[in-house]
Length: 276
Length: 327
Image (cartoon, rainbow over all chains, first blue to last red; front, top):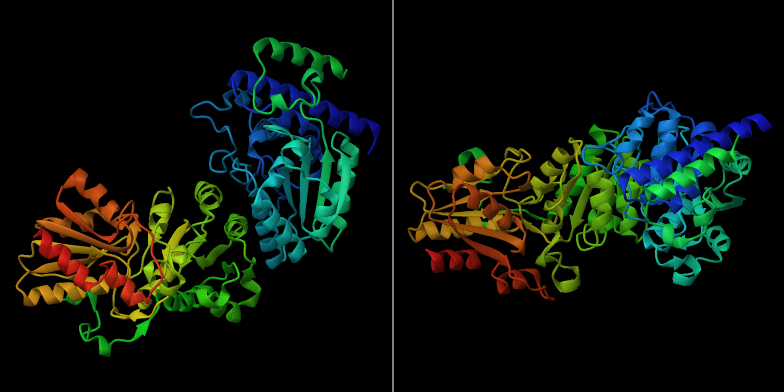
């Protein structure tokens, strides 16, 4: 990847962050921290990694993106709008009556959404079912499952981890947003997840750890994952919740609230100044 | 008298003449046939291949069979993913576990997603017997009929379970099929019509003021009750409400039109079960006196299936008692 390509992706991620902040302020409710923290990875996925066509969201040969932790919907919507799935203006309808942009993503409302989610812990098994069905049909669609670290506390998640490892679903890549926060505090205070790498390895997964804000590292990890044919791969992406807005970075209290109008104006100005 | 159009076994009232099979067997044969007719059909189980009869499909189509292990939440959600990319998955377990344990996964990933996963709840009702209250699903109809997009079917015998399996395989919607473990009399025939969502009048008498609306194992008992009451000069009609959702409003309202008393009979809690579905309809359209034969807010316990049904009043005698006390 050239410096120019990388800079272009970083600029897109920055624009998506501005969209996230703006839509959440307009909506008046929603989840800020996780959405901002995943902007780099969503950008890399939708603008480099994925085989997809925003103008033809039901294209048979597309890769599938399963968002398991549906509450970070603003980053999904922001990314999809910037990628051309729907007009940017529609982001202002987030969480409003009649909107296609439901508070948590709903497959029946918006083309390009592959799965309805919100209740945690069931995305990875849906992704596993897709990957298994593609293998049955000898199709080479790849399935990406985006997950939070907090939802690794759900039993259903571990059923899926065991299942995908057992079935050697190498056409499946899980991506964990390892930001260490959940609603009630830090994950390792609420219910410890470590040693996370060992746990996934023990369940027969290929594990790659990266800095979740290093777009190039994430793209390389996806390429490695796709070419690894023996096991499914999990990319544990170490992220900072609220990334891009220094005053809320790493603060779990921003899990589930939107910015005020003053905060939005300040943060958007800062982001607009950050990449020139 | 037996409704001739229902083409029931003419030896209906001589139990010794009837074959006895569990509804799960009818499902097992139906699933294999559905698999032959449509290659999108796949079967999943959660470590219960033999007793759910999913094994029969596995033998025929090993490459289209998945055992997820003892993991009912994964069972529902893996199936959701498969359905999302074009498969028609049948997920098999016991009703207490699926849809019992995995209800939220069924709600979110199957019903809100609106994908054609077919949930097969085996060993439902009291008739799982000796296993006791933990394993006797008496709430599953309630759990499933509250969900938008879900179809709910309770076949009356093994043959009807076969027909129902083929019928739900052909829809692009989620469905729940409730099955039993025990061998029960097979009184319908290959000529008996089966239309999803269409209640069947099985027994009708001129001037009947009493009607029984039954599902599952209680349908045969309702027929026995009607026959016995006929001999006592109490004319009673019987409706088999095999599809609880979508409810056949037209068929039910026509059935109850001239009745003074409606008795609903099911192997399920009376709260939010089949009888409740009937009452929701009647109270808005043609209120009637309704008596519920079912489980009245308690759990089951161990025992022989027939002994349990008798003790809980879920048999011919229980239905007759309910009618005679309320007429």
